[in-house]
Length: 156
Image 1 (tube, helix red, strand yellow):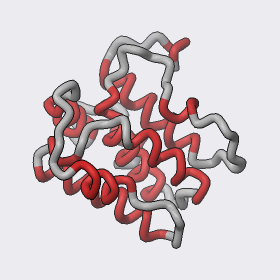
Image 2 (cartoon, rainbow, N blue to C red):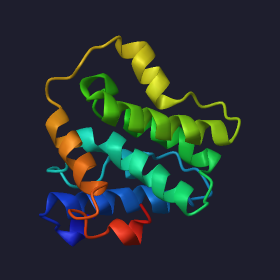
Image 3 (cartoon, rainbow, N blue to C red):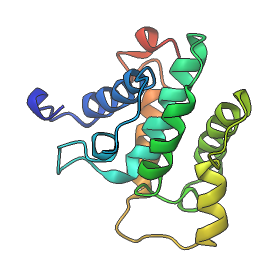
């Protein structure tokens, strides 16, 4: 993603979504999870990670692709770096929580649902460095056919 040198926030977000979609098919685990949480773009807002994962889950589900169990471990690591769902409006929070819940219900796993863990551990603490408005704006763009030029391609 670094080599793409994307400047437009939506294009960067879409690239991030498909980065997570593509990594669902990685079949063997390495000891280095840095490829999951270190995107290589210092300007990329970490608060969008949780929304990018939720949209990636939505894309995978709509294309009838199951989320691999291997993928669930690194998801927990990168979710911890993102914004607290408690900082988001109820519609965005329920969308994200619903996507994670549906993925975690697909198959029995030893990995805890990262949203449930986040809610359990944070107890409504909100990191002031994260911009909830950015997450809400990106959510509105991605699911608006008129504002998202990739809407049909994504199958949303």
